[in-house]
Length: 113
Length: 114
Image (spheres, each protein chain N blue to C red):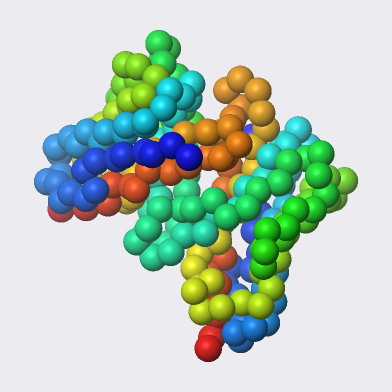
């Protein structure tokens, strides 16, 4: 199966600042997905990123708060903008790898102080 | 959109017993149903999945059953071991275009007591 590298693995940020999370896949994929997992909760899809087009955001998530880039078929970034303590979560990227199903990156544990 | 309900939220069993986790989904067009295991501080890991053209799938001690008519699917773990302790998530998806996204259940915390 493919390898997904996500970084940073964790960060502590000041409120009002922004953090960009990177996701790199070692094979080309059409869609990349960004999820948020709040402490003790399930995974909630933030947006779907297709190469060469605007990301598709789920209800409750907006581009100004979570801008996404998808410059090629192996890479994507998610930015968490103007952060507040409520943004403290684990952020995970995911890709669909055919027979291997959906695979997740190792996650970014974000704490906003 | 799709809604996935998962029960129970917590499950405690004795080592060697079986564990069953159940999920229901709302969208009859969903056709892919994976199960993930997430250990504390780690990423979700796919443990088994089933597609809508199959009613049951088994992999060693783990099995998944699907009832499309009733729109529910279940995870069965036999001969549980302490290392099976984790949070388990079910999910549903329908293939095609932008509908590849997974919708997750709220998770089940499984504790296997030695």
